[in-house]
Image (cartoon, rainbow, N blue to C red; front, side):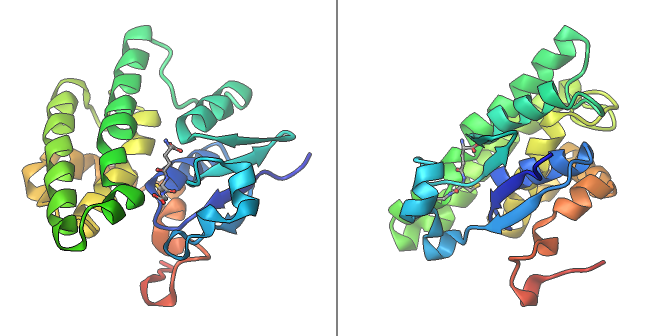
Length: 215
Ligand SMILES: N[C@@H](CCC(=O)N[C@@H](CS)C(=O)NCC(=O)O)C(=O)O
């Protein structure tokens, strides 16, 4: 069978969701780095794969899929081993609710193209404000759902989406994570797992040497 190809950027939280899921489900894949800072997402070639000019995109089973959550759902449906959605419908809804909060409400307002649009001088302030705003609400949701992970004691899509968002908040958007003890605890817990560790930006082939980590 053809090996899936992931179009990715090492620091992209949306790409990280796919990397973790592929690792979690032990699906081998090839990486094609798309350097967002050099606008490689806007080349004609990549635009023909993803007209929204964002990563990720995944070529798999003869099609090119875009939209990270559509990709996660596809992987879950076609490779159900090591599920990332709980069986219980209520828990599934809780997972999807957290996923939507992260991917629909939190991530888009801190995305590169939005930050580029905001005047250079206001950019950091904008990003920190909205990242903190989102995390206050996600922390409140988690207070009702979290066990060891976001929803109960199993890894789900919610963890897959939360970890990249938390990394960006802590390391790039200067959010004071001490205000979010549940998120911080889940973050630390997930990063003990190989699937998350191997998907970390600092372990990707396109990560600049100064940040690279081989621990
Ligand atoms: N809804 C899309 C969002 C994709 C997205 O925003 N990707 C970001 C990286 S995490 C990107 O490529 N940004 C490029 C830009 O803003 O120009 C998904 O979930 O796949």
